[in-house]
Amino acid sequence: MKGVYPRKNKAGEVTSYQVKWRLGGTGEWQHERFDDQDPAGVFREAVVAAGFQWPEGWVKGKGYIDPAAELPEDERYRFDVYARESIESRTGVEASYKAAILKEAESYLFPTFANCDIRSTEHFSTRTVRSWVNQMSETLVWRGAVQKKMSPKTLKNLHGLLSSILEEAVNEEPPLRNRNPCKLTKLPRTDDDGVSDGEDEDMTFLVPLEVQGIVAQFHRPEDKALVRIKYATGLRWGELTALAKMHVFRDPETGQPKVRVSRAWKKKSGGGFYLGKPKSKRSRRTMRITESTWNDFLLLGLEDLQPEDLVIHDGKGGRLPYSTFYDRWMGSVGRSHEAGTLPREKHPTLHDLRHSHAAALISAGRGLTYVQRRLGHESIQTTSDRYGHLLPEADDAAMDIIEATLGEAPRPLGVVQHAELPAQRDGSPRVYAVHLGAHTEGFWDLEHAQAAAAQWELDRGEPARVEAWSSSWWTRSIPGGLPLVRSREVDRVELWSAGPALYAGDGTEHAESFNGTEPVAVVVWEWEDRYTIDLAVGWAEWRPDGTTEAVALGLDRTAVAAEFARARERALMICGLNTALLPERQEEPVTA
Image (cartoon, rainbow, N blue to C red; front, side, top):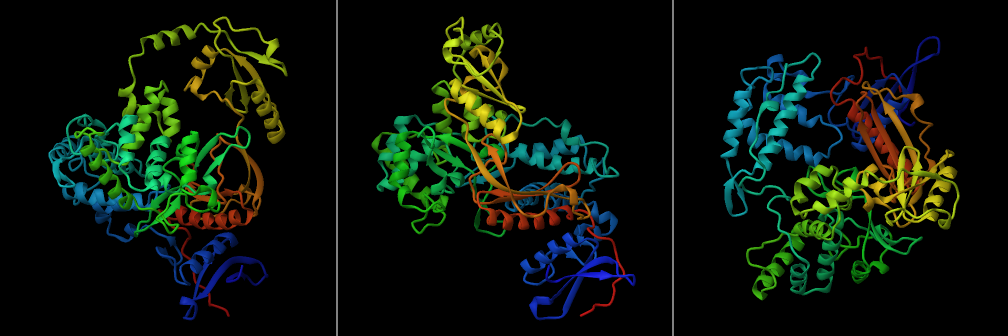
């Protein structure tokens, strides 16, 4: 690589690699040394990206070093110093999220604990944490023009932040503390009175007629279509406004209209927005939409767009800000109050359309697991906490589940016809379970099941087993039950994949971890984490074994290669956040 030079000893053996560049491109020569060529190349790319300056946070000869390491010993363990380092060094989270929780710490943790010693059992005890919790529960915060006590959910989040910092001190090597006093603190119930500081508190549920009443008050047809789409899909605003034409399509096999969520608008730490990964892995999902919703997408000009064009935009093809549309939404809500189509005690936000979508699914008999997958919640507990109270009394359903434990066991199938299978004793539909490696998929149609098994064997070179299960056996064997059974074939896509490249804590790349930097063709099935229809997606993540992983994949080979290079650069930066990347070295004279 240009700018990376091997250094040799008198015997002609390469002993290290030196990166050389002129400061700012034209200034004095700068240089840094590495034991291996690959880390040197990644560092060279970081220098170029920084405008031929030293990368921010890099210490010559050491790498990305914890700034707190240079502080006096006692000052390093002052809570505000330790907490800032803890938050800023976290991996696998967005920069905007770090900035948000640091602001919370400055507002609500530091006024009480800033000058405390993280190691002190007197400063941080069950008594002091409880006293802080009681103080926070009486704290008044502003929500618009209203000042109320802090909500229990906000207090729970702040307590969780404090607990995570103290837990890090417990897990230091050697430990700075013997225990975490936050674990013995009882918090106020989350359904107590308090100001709503989160998007999911004080939810307002709208029935379909109320949604229609609000829609009718919009002046522009495009606005009406947007509201109907948001209600019909339950998408978050950042997901909805990130949809491009390529994400809204008809299934080539069934012709059913669908939406694929693979990205969302994210805040930059310094201001502005960018397109990044959705909120969690489960937020990446494909969902059915109705023909009416498909027609609303057409009304927004879907057919005239290029694959990468945003479907919902600001009129110039760019991101539509929440605040811009929120003003029009509130105007329509007000007019609905005046028209009598919306009760005056209801003051829904745009996000309440998502809650109302969930309520509609539950009232139609859909289970919480189905709702979880539809909304993209990472945990079923989240779905249960927010919407479990909407479930109707279900004594009959509970009895059916108990009865289901007596259902018949599955039986393996070869390639058979429907007529060859005996009818189930209870007359309920049969489920065809296909075991694809460690994963099990259920189908209503035998042909779809056998097609999936045959394709899996072609793709992976390993056998797939098809079994005939009774509906009751499926219900008690598979979490989520019958809503997960497919009435269509499984989606799969051929992607280019690069990586993973693995880096040790000192920045050394594991040579055996991947076959070079060139992408290779792979087939990914829709339930697998790597499933995407983006041109290129890359990421770098720290792993529990102490290594940092860089991966990229997507539909376009060139774009994947470029994204992989950026992911490797990010991986090297991540693995050096808390420890010195390189040992101290004796500098050698710079050669031209």
